[in-house]
Image 1 (cartoon, rainbow, N blue to C red):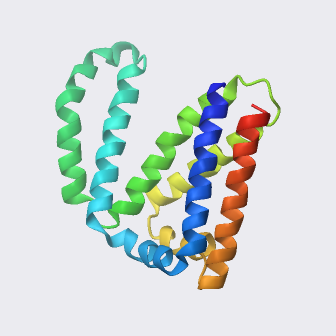
Image 2 (image 1 turned 60 degrees about the vertical axis):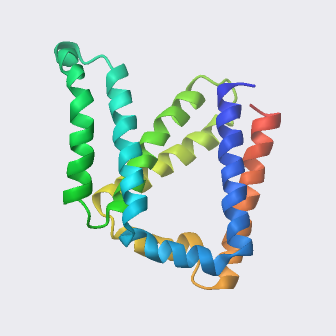
Length: 181
């Protein structure tokens, strides 16, 4: 299996799981999405993941004359985590989710870059949509509440239809992973 097929299989499985959850428990999913922007612990956990992942990516980059500053990442990351949790507590969860979308798009695009199949564009489009969502949530986190009715639906019937579409997309991605990539 190629790297792109593994990434696509993971994304397809995740889409099937989320779509299935939306099909079976739409009210619970909507309730969780309504509480998510103001919830404290998911934001803190996502900020910790984001900042550690960012520090890891920075440590791998060639920064020229700034390479000497990389040793300071060991103390800057915990200080940054503390400062983000303390002073960015307003709508921290959507901001951190946006950062996670931005960070996750990089490896997905790297996996799709050298694959010879023309269908790699499907995964690239998904990654670029993540970048758009990530930038939106990071810079304007109140858009999370505006976009969620489109993503999870406004009542149980619409949420189930959207969940079914997500599950179908997940199965399409799994088929691409197994038979195309």
